[in-house]
Every structure is written in C-alpha cells, then in structure tokens.
Length: 474
Image (cartoon, rainbow, N blue to C red; front, side):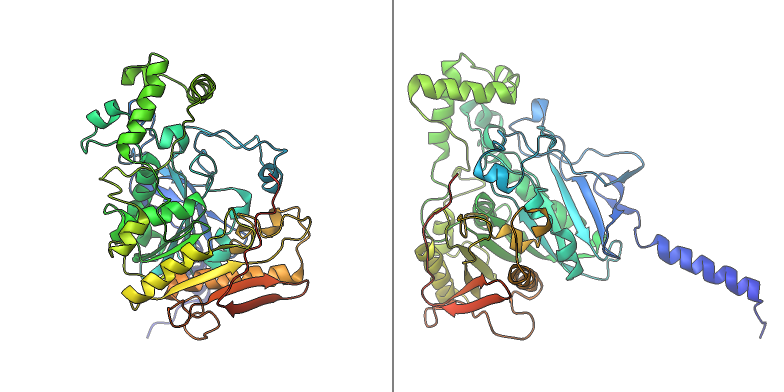
C-alpha cells in the first residue's frame, strides 16, 4: 500500500476543510435563479433576506393576482430585506409607534412581494426540517415581516425549525375590489390580492424549501391579529388549504361570523361609488393614481359623503367561498392540529369563540386543538397583556424593546418558543414527551394560561381563563 506523504496529507486536510467550510453557506437553485444567504451570529444558521416569491405587482400588475418570479442573472446575495408594503405608518408618538419604535427608515413600496428564511440546514435536502410561515398583523392595513418584535429567526432555527416570514399587499393596494377589475380577471373576481400573495408565498415554500433543508409536506402557518385572520383564510381557501400541515391563530378570534364580513358584490359597489365620485371610471385612470392619492381621496370621500371606506378580505366565491367559521362547521378546513388563543387584555374577550372552535374540532377530529391565554402583564407601564404583547415572547425578541423584562419574562419567552416550535415539529407543543399543555376537548375544556413573575414563568391549565379587558391606551 502506497504511503501518503505528510505534505500531501496536510494539503488533503486543508482541501477537505475548505470544502466543508464552503458548504456552510452554499449557492442554492430556486425559482428565479441562484441565491446565497448570509451567516448569522449563531453558528450554522444562515439567513436569506428579501427573496422574491412573485413578480413585482406594479404598473399593469397592480390589482392582479401574483405572477411568477422574474428571473435574475448570476447569484443573488440575500442580505437585505425587501420593501414593506405601502401603508400609512404608525405615528411614532402613538402607543404602538412607541412600542415597536417605528422607524422612518423602513422602505415602503408597491414592489413588496418578498420573503425571508432562517435555516440551520441550507443546501441539505436530506434534513427534511419542519417549516413555519409567519404572517404579520396590522388590520390588513399596515405592518411588515421584519418588524423588530418579530426578529426571531435565529431562535426558531436553533431549535430545528425553518422560519419563513412573508410580506403581502395591504389596504387599498391589497384588497381593492371593483367591477372593472373583476371583468378583467380570469376568475371574474377582484380584491383579496393580499391573501393571494400569502397563498403564493405558501406555494413558493412548498416548491423551494427543500433547497433550504425543509420538508414541503410539513409547513405550519401562524399569524397574529390580521395575520391570524389570514391563517384562518388560508385554511378555509380551496386555493391554499392543502399545503397547510398545522396552524396557529393568535388573537384572531375563533368560531364566529365576523371574518371576513363583506361580500364581493358589496365591496365592488362601495369602491365603484368611491371611484365614480372622483370621475375615475377606467382601470388606466385608477392604476395611474399613487398610493398617497388613493389615501387622500378616501379621506376626502369619507368627509364629503360620511361613508367610511376600508379594504380587507372579501367572500368572493373563488379564494373564499364563505367565512372560516362556515368552513370549520362544514369540515372544509384542513384536518390538522390547531393552536389558538389570545391575550388577557386583548381587543375583545375571545374566550367563547376560541372555546367554540376548539370544542367543535374535538367533536370532528382526533387531531388535537390547543387553546391558550397569554396573561403576563408586561413590565414598564400599566398596558397589561395588550393586543400583540405576546410577540416579544413568541419570537424571543426582547432585546429590541424598551421594557424592563425580568428573568421570569425570559424564561416564559423561552418556554413559548419551545411550545411554538414543538408544535411545528410534532403537532404537540409539549414535544415528543410531556403533557403540561393538554388539548382542549368537550370533556376537558381547558386553556393553558401563560404568565410570569419576576423570577420564573408560570404555566397553569384552567377551564376559565380570566379576560381582564382592554387597558391599553392607544
């Protein structure tokens, strides 16, 4: 047997080392072209920011369903977030403006269909890691995927779950219905563009996530507020529901008829009256209007006619054939595990709609539904467990907050990230073993109450969560 010299061994070792190092952040082939991510402070976790999942919805593509990605040349380095959707931003002196430290440096653009990925297994198709797609809230009017309170990609990926956050069209750009738009649509509908964007992102994940080490057959969708409503719509829609493996709805209600609350015909009529008032009778005229002009027109229209106009999902008999509640009752939502809950000082008492949904599921399926109440009264002021307060905990993003969080808050946050990522992995927030958080059933109708004191997290199962009313001052 021929011996290998020491210099040759040294060269071989160095070559293998360099090859191994190069594979930590490989070039990936995805829809549109090649992409490379950026290393994060946590070893082995790669972030991909600003990956396009559809063509820019601008010009003639405004108010159309999302179109395929425009290919690019060379290797795209995904190191910068895409623009946030066009919106009226928070007043920095308002409650949420101060809470999220709203920044004037965030770019806003109609070219906004981008997603972001954090993975510990870039390029390794054999890993088949669970995937979680996050949908931000904001009343379908505002918000974006990279708000500071949602900066949790590294924490999630370090637990073996690939986190994907998505941006979608909002407000008048994302949910504008009009008879002329319906007439030019192949499906004869208009509006719901923001939901279609989310569905397109979900489809993109299904088609491409293997490149990032993910399992396209194990995708959890989760969201808060309007993001929770979006989760419910994606579960109810015949366009997207087959791609969902598990779903988490945070502060989005449950079984009721409130969401969505308007038909396509009603939305079209309201928007036609709005545009006719200003003499905008062609799509060319409407598409030529800037976002600022559209917002100013809506304000003038409301002042003059006293008719309030807004834009949100509609029942169009295409993307949505009915409400989420109707789909749940008729067993037309995916038969999957669900997690659903709200905060103790939320916008309303969601105990009954959450309980009703969880109870319904327990009679329809052997798949579990887990109910929760986030009760921690946040330190620093008297705002309590306000609507969105749980985001600091679910993403373990407290480093971005002004609040004097304690060791108990940190512990609760770590426990919640464990619960959410375990749910994405197994459909059970407890993980493979453990039974602290029990599913809600008609025989055992219990919520997990999440709280903390100064030193430790406090977790308790109870049949009667205590809604404390909305104490937040906006």
